[in-house]
Amino acid sequence: MYFKRILELDAVLKKNSVLLLGPRRTGKSFYIRNQLTPTRVYNLLEADTFQMVAARPHIIREQIKKDGELIVIDEIQKLPILMDEVHLMIEEYKACFLVTGSSARKLTRSYTKLMAGRMRTLRIHPLCYKELGQLELMRVLTYGAIPSVYLSDEPWEEIRSYVGDYIREEILAEGLSRRIEKFSRFLEVAAISHTEQLNFEEIGRDAQVPPRTVRDYYSVLSDTLLGEILAPFKKHPTRKATSHGKFYFFDIAVAHGLLKVKEVEPMQQYFARAFEHLIYRELRTYCDYKRRDSELTFYRDTSKREIDFVIDDAVAIEVKSAEQVHDRDLKTIQEIGKELNFKKKIVVSREKHRRAVNGIEIVPVEQFLQELWEDEIF
Image (cartoon, rainbow, N blue to C red):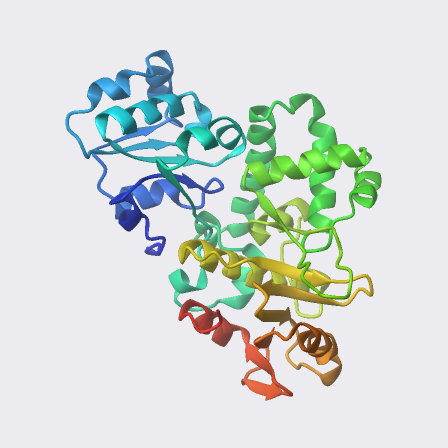
């Protein structure tokens, strides 16, 4: 089965070189093979290509034939020094580059200022609703939407392999091999607290590492694109907002793989978290693919009132995995909606039909996703 990716990379490449970031197996190489026509591709995961370019980085410069060629360097985090060559070739040879990476850790630390104005940074995500065309809810909530997992006849085996490869390869790549046991414990605790507000002290106790180390480990997850800390909304005029963010893995498959969750069922804790994660992932993907500057946050105050997602200061989105939303479920979004004067207040659920209660829109999940990708939510 073939899914055409909707990331408008070719349009951006007509104007700028691009650094395309995304976790492994999200489809970067597939996109290059099937939706672009580059002049040449240097895939640094190929041992012979890596050895050739590592020994003579200037060989790419020597092989340029004319201005305007599209040159791809795939998985550049394997040899980040090539960014110096890319910089030179953009400046002097007017070449157009698509550089991909599954870790931003070394690239952003050393080369962000160097490439400013010369290269656009884009993100690629797992398959989204717009690409899938329809929502197989239970499959997505259980196995996520990493292309190789979603399309597999044995998705759990793919997930187990994915998580195992990540722990082995990324830890070695980031120089954490001496702390593999501590980091492995941390990963399990991070999976347990997935979608929840972070408490570094509690996570440190559970993982048996200091809170400072927990912060460092979350930085590793963010830099290697395995997840993101969602910042809290802080624009309430009178109430003090929480200062700690919530963490989301880039795909629910990672959390389920770490926790060995092979299936989810309604009314389970894992089901509710996966349902919330689905909405997070679609919102984040939409913002990145549509290249919107909208700010995605969540609201939580010291009274522990919480709204799952806030878009700018205009749209509040609460996620309920139940088939029936009750009036008591609307109390928080109604109260905070009045205080902050949100233009839209939406509850996404598994109800079968759309309805409205006191200005709050209760929307079935698939209808919400349709409206999101038709630009009707923002």
